[in-house]
Image (cartoon, rainbow over all chains, first blue to last red; front, side, top):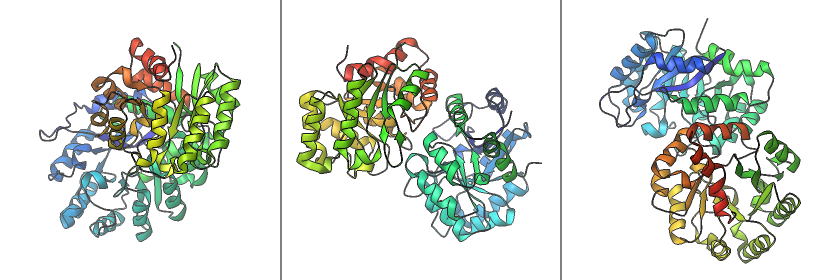
Length: 254
Length: 243
């Protein structure tokens, strides 16, 4: 097994949200292993909704979920940047106390703009924590690659990751952002193979990671995205960097 | 099982460069019997006649392998209608429109003259869908309601972030069909569940995505053989009037 899935989720039932998935970490890891994925980084999907308020509870729940599989499952914290100081403290708590690997944000689902001042203390904290921020992207008006790349421009010390590399319509802008900003990373999760080839050929390969968008034990999209990536005709050395090395470095894996 | 690929592009464009030989090889490797072909980027946007000539020529040379669809920019107005008639009279079976590339709102009146012509010929219209502002599912529904006798194909099931809209936009409008390239398999399962197998059409999007994984995706989304028969073959044949 030689794949790290850098963009995955688990929706953990909280009795409140409409989207309720059955979930078990063991089942999720089983599906990962079956498909050659050794490690995945998850966010708690329930927290990515604009009506989420108890981030501490949701992040704790995710920490408990991944705890049984410390070599396979890793966590991203979720906060809402509009919560100001509270959001910063929660991000810090998740990284320092719960051992989470970074922050996942979804500007359009959560309802904030990356250009809003509320993002500044969050990015500043990410620099102090040396923790990357992964963004949903590819969808206007709050989640375009260049809106997200702008944070990389404002904060050269931050590690800013485009979680979808611009998807179907904006992958060219993901390339534009990555070529200008050395701290802007692209996760291949959703763009066509045509777009992935262009990204791999035009962007520093040390700043490309791979993700599937896995949700709980939803194997359909998982195998689809893995097989699509495997269909790319690129040197093994590049594949290894994208599927493993770069993600391992971002996650500080030994 | 016969497989017809309902969405492929071919031609020597700016971004996309793919020859008929390369497309045929991809089809052969994946046991695709026939593919719907349309022009690529610049031929879709501005050099319509040149692009369509290429498609007409290929459809004539390989009648057992290719089904040609015209690419026409509605901004050419009366000339666009004349070009469409020429293409249909020369054997092309449908029209592809690409609002983002061609620069119009999907349901703008600009496109009506072309649709009126398509209605006369009884041919389907494929829209590249899923781009914010210019190619949205509810825009397609509006158009489909205004032209109830024309069959519309929603390209890519409006990938990516219209998952909230796709079912609602298509469910009660019987002349909207869903083409499967790019979209994740769960969405296809959902459409089959809520709307039915009769309105799902397999397209790979080649060369933007490889054919193999797109076929595999359909088999994941629709394990049943009778559903696959419709999605891979029968639905598109019905739309283009083939037995």
